[in-house]
Image (cartoon, rainbow, N blue to C red; front, side, top):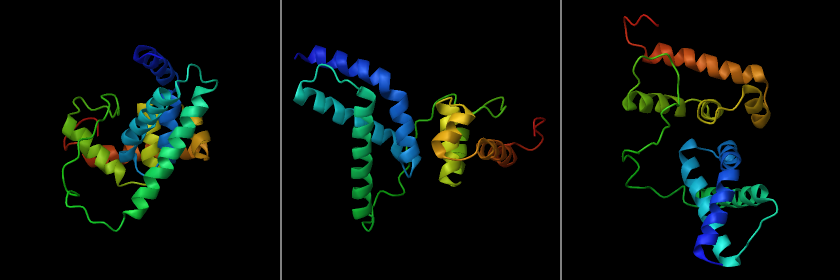
Length: 181
């Protein structure tokens, strides 16, 4: 099978499975900082498999990709657990976060990249479930009912996470004298 054919098959399956794979990884990871790496590793592993096995059609590509993602998650956290006693010299290096432009709608007139990083850092210090709810709601545009189903909690709990945290964010980050406060 030619490289062009492999690429076409990969792109088709990637387009069809990306959102569900991203949701799966977000729901099953222990840190939202790992999501992009885990997603990339999942599709890299799929592409390697596609090249090796010369697969033309996968009957249930969504389940196949989720299976790969599940294995990547297991491998990642097993490795992380084994190496948890190793001290890194690079722990305090500045991280480059890729946050979508439409991540928050907090009625700010101007949201700078620095403000978004401050808000994201604030959310990371909250409960992991709250950070997951925000990511699923604002980045993936999931409905509150769908988030509640995925996280096995009530819709009212999800709403409380969103609205209470928005209230905290406004209180924390609104400038003094701002008429929207």
